[in-house]
Amino acid sequence: MKKFLLGAAALMVAGVPALAADIPVYKAPPVVAPVVFSWTGWYVGANGGYSWGRGSTDLTESSITTTTATITTLAGTPIATATQVGTPVAFVGSDRAKINGWLGGLQTGYNWQVDRWVWGIEADLQITGERGGTSFCFPLSSLCGAGTTALGTASYSLPWFGTFRGRAGIAFDRILLYATGGLAVGRLNADYTDAIAAGFVTPAAAATGSGGVTRAGWVIGAGVEGAVTNNWTVKVEYLHVDLGSTGASVTGVTTGSLSVPIGDFRTTIAQTTTFNSLFGTRFTDDIIRVGLNYRFAWAPAAVVTKY
Image (cartoon, rainbow, N blue to C red; front, top):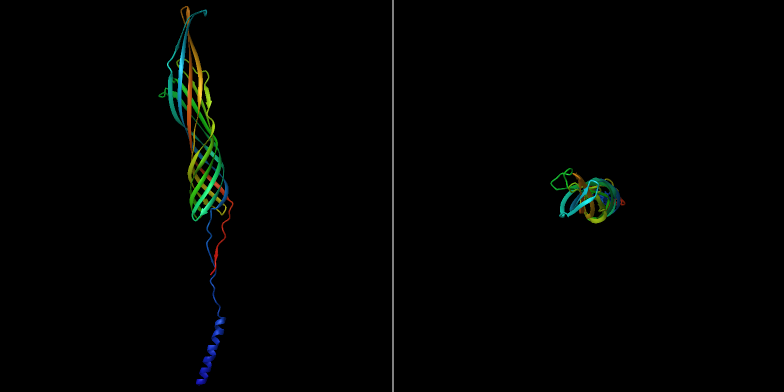
């Protein structure tokens, strides 16, 4: 009996390796790391929005009126003439005009992403419909119209501008918050008109001048951009643009006369007013726009970790 039990035990022990070899071994599947969106790469796009421009204009004006009185007979024979040069008169005024309008344009740029930080450069060119103007009337306490002694007007337009900016922001996967700032260049057209009306002298022809100039200034702003797909992104952006100052000097002459018959004589009074006006305008612009970008970059491949 003992021999039988010992033999059975020996057979069982010998069969254990064979049974172990037949048991399947489970292997865990490879771990796939999640794909992290990257903002790195070139992009191009278009934008549109609205701008609230302001033209702050100062006007300094000086004038002098010369009065000549001539007495003649009714037939026109001169009898006496007298001339008086008046005291120079100075006017100073200022006003802030709204220069609002729609705008649209194109942009291109490049982003570098390091960890969650995104750095980049961007350039854009905008076409605008910004227009505006203002009027100056003297004395300054009077409304424009009857009784004013001088009238000056200024009209403005900003047909185009462009910017070249740096961008710095922080990414929350497919959402990018950023600040931006740099160089701004634009064409500011400023047309000025001035005329003097002193006493009974009415401005027969207004004098005009132009302060149109292409100027370089600065721009700052901020925005938020979101990736709709791996290649398409949309953004909302605010920019403040300062293009500095422009201006013009306007010089003109107005004349008028008044003839009054008195008995057998006629008295004619003629007035000539010479004036010089100096306009100076500082232009700033506040812009809100929406943009659409196409990125020339693909999402990185998934990283597979093997165990």
